[in-house]
Length: 64
Image (tube, rainbow, N blue to C red; front, side, top):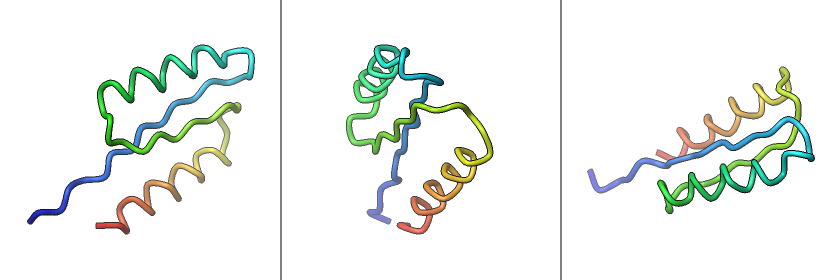
């Protein structure tokens, strides 16, 4: 098959004070996976974020 896998990188910090850390995470993932879709989040990890990731990864699998 000529289809390529979708690569999704998730970068997260728990507060806006860590914005520089988030930017470094994003730059690192982009250097490793330039074709990847980057999902970034500044929030505390809770059930809402878990559900959000489940939805996003489900969308990626639906693209196949």
